Length: 303
Image (cartoon, rainbow, N blue to C red; front, side, top):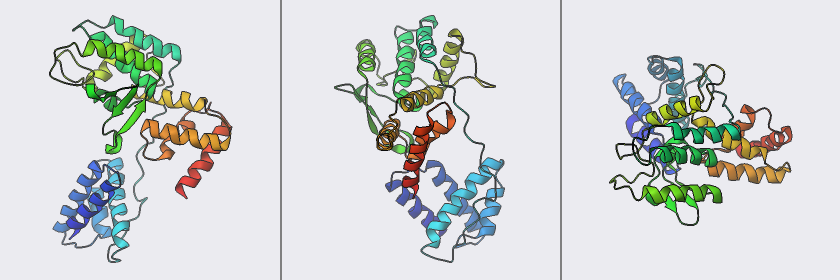
């Protein structure tokens, strides 16, 4: 009974646009555990026991939170389902504060690709275009590495297939980005490769995220950007930088802030506008009047 409820719950939320890959696996495991206990409904004791069996505090929190959300959904239909407490385990540690690159640092990173070994004809150009594209659009590294040749649309538009959450979106490109991408594309289509990824490794297949991270670390070292605080700079920090610079240019009138935030959230592929608002929290130097207007907008979204 619980397994069928889990499948129905996950299917419904996926129809609403949520991926729920991890949640689906977790709830399936919970339903199997509960079945072994003889449960036909969600029981707090069973849910807590299953969550407690996880090896780390963060995983315990994630497990119990998944069951709690399921329980709230099922309890509305059948009060026989018990709702576990939502704050029994501490939430995972918050997100790392981003490193915001200067324009000069981004230029040095792209220029440093000339120091990479020329393992094949497009090796340097592939990484220069890859990192330049991320810096100019705020794409996630997974989205950029997944771009196919056919995703480069006419008139300077880029199709991002199945980004985070499984959603696709169209990204309009600035004219300078369009020109740089088209220049790279002219050389890329001349490569006799079966793989249709836009960015290829020396093995003539898509670049892996691990290799992209490794290459990025090499480039930051060549560019003289070693680390921030106690950790190395990340590719994802370029996405943070794009969002931050965009918000810095945001008009300060409340109605303009609202439109700007919605546009940026859509461009970045955020499922919730509160994720866009986080960039203000993470970057104190952004204007306080923008933050105040954004808070009013977020308040309306969650009301």
